Amino acid sequence: MTRAASVDATRMPPWALTIAAMLSVQLGSALSVGLIAAVGPAGTAWLRLTIGALILLALGRPPLRKIRRRDLPALIGLGVATGLVTIAFLAAIERIPLGTAVAIEFLGPLTVAAVRSHSRRALACPAAALVGVVLLTKPWHGTIDPSGVGFAAFAAVGWATYIVLTQHVGDRFTGITGLSLTVPVAAATAAIFGVPQAAGHLTPGVLAAAVGLAVLLPVLPFALEMLALRKMTPTAFGTLMSLEPAFGLLLGLILLGQGASPIQIAGIAIVVCAGALAQRDGKRHQNVGDQPVIRSELDLVG
Image (cartoon, rainbow, N blue to C red; front, side):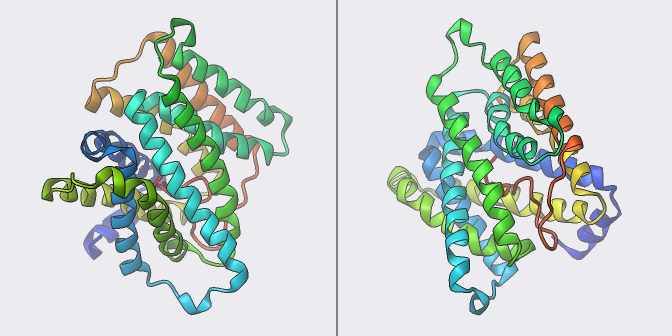
């Protein structure tokens, strides 16, 4: 991001920065479908995470000497979780519509927010969102891909795990430093499955596409979210982020031609409302510094 672009971005209202970050994440997810067709979901995850790690290492220059032995389990755990959830989400959008995958994955952070809430009403939000997911998948028609739903559900569990571990890592390493330490671990994890899948399919076009996707996820969204969190409360940020399943549905429709029936649109609306209610009633704990708590596929996931 150039200095001029950075100055312009700081003048944008925080809600606009957050929406731009969400659009970048979902745009990157939609555009990943083409790369998945070339190198598979694990290969796509490996390329995206590896290039993202190189960019973040160049920008963050992590202070390796400051890493303590007791920091390693959380750092490694967070990196492994990020690598696995990225593969799972990409495998999901290979099989089911983007909006549906995002809504199912969103159940993970929504459940974390509800459990940590002091409001009984918020505890009902995951159940309400699950109703929305059922309307989205319409299992009574028998047309949804069970493996796609399973991968998205795994991503939901992984995202919830990621949030919990992020708070531990965020106490020691904030902002881009935390990412520059964990994303390389995520890339190494994805390499176990991704290298065999991508072998023999790496062309200049594939590598160029991977570089572009790495910028969309995580570099640009993370920078935008960091700026937004300097101007708004974590609760407001989390409530606004509840719109992400709707953006996934919208970009799936525009870029991938994935239509939605009225009942599926109602399902997305229920998920969005449940997420917003959970964040309003919940008391999220923000990490030290600027590290976003709600997510990060860190933005590598989606």
